[in-house]
Image 1 (cartoon, rainbow, N blue to C red):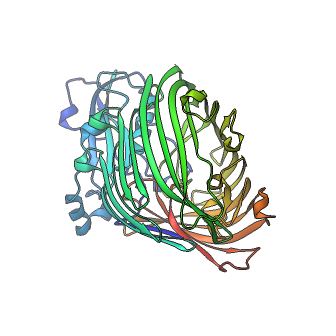
Image 2: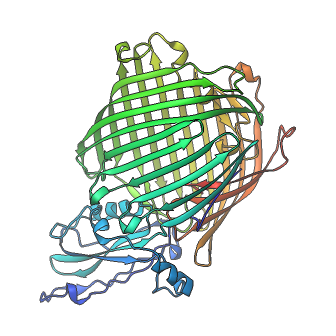
Image 3: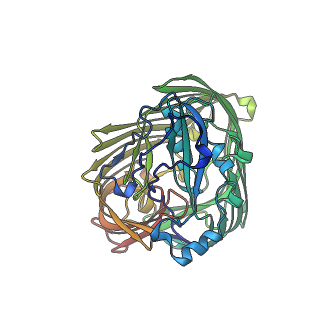
Length: 563
């Protein structure tokens, strides 16, 4: 089981209603200008799953005269629920995000023509930032041919001590970290961490910024000293910041040392050291951008290297070393349709969900004289489609393939195909049904690549990696409940009852695999004050078959990006 606790848990705050108000800074002699009287609905008060707004209806094409910024502290002093003396004192310890940081991420500017698509996409970009719990845009003054806008953001608590305790079968892991996710209101994030387990200690440093110097360039620097090696990463890129971003480029250099612990039926059966290197440079162009879809082409050069070494507990040998150095070309297709939902993967939070198709196809080739053991073809593809029906049903279809083919080294020509179908039925704003089925199939997989089930891999009533194979399927059914509870104005609460069924099979060394199933209940907690996206999960499950030799109840505690 796994547990992670910080000063607060993480989640998005419900939207705060802001009625447009006009102050002296936006008044002028234009008699046609009037204050806008619309109101942004609170997420918690919304009766529908899909949140729709008509605030900008009729304003398309007006010139943006002025953009104002309103930064709400972690605890809103204007909200009676946040006016506790302790909360107001905590506000004084926090430096709010600077307006210049927010302005640099907007897709519109003063003097430009208002486009509703740019307003909505700017909101999505801001809502994706971990240092904000809330972001939206409202008109404040409307004239015959002009409009004034107000960008409203609410900060997340940035300074966060983190404690962790996790257990996977016989290995207990503990750790401590101190993290500042918004240094001096700039959006920079720094984390210093220490972790130890029965087999490994680590001291790490992680510095990230999604928009360094208020540009569209993102950076990440990571370094860690471990008892079995050193880990490092340097990643600098100008990504496709928005759908209409014309070009992108980046570089990524990473070295990683770890110990692969191979488990089967709640026992360790093998162990070895794994040293991996990944280097990549790329550049891309948006070849076609319109109101319906975006198409992009990318070219790049990648190096993927894996080396293995035996340890004192190696009992079944180690995988064969491999290297793939290749150039590649990639095609991307995105439908430009999005919806704002609530209570899908988060609790009482606005969730931006891409509706329609997303496709990515990458094909690469490397000759043998590029330090490859032979000619290699590298291919990576993914396809997802989200279908919304009458705002009551949400279907997601997904397919992916990841593989490599060597002309002269068939033993390491591995491949994994995976397909997923999931379905959300929104019975009402609090009660939901969720179903999913995943099927994966591998070919010539190294031992550390084998497909497993148990614990976090889909069957919560069984220990980690309880079954192994080159084929796997998992079916899950959940009854979800999203409550209105907001404990101490800090924590949102949800609950779930679930049934899991599936198995991993297909490799003769593990024998026949029995179909497994379990039932269980769970609790979900999410904070409205810290960085978005993390839901604390507590699941208690009991296996229904093959119960000999394992606990009657399996408890899983951890954090996830989904309910």
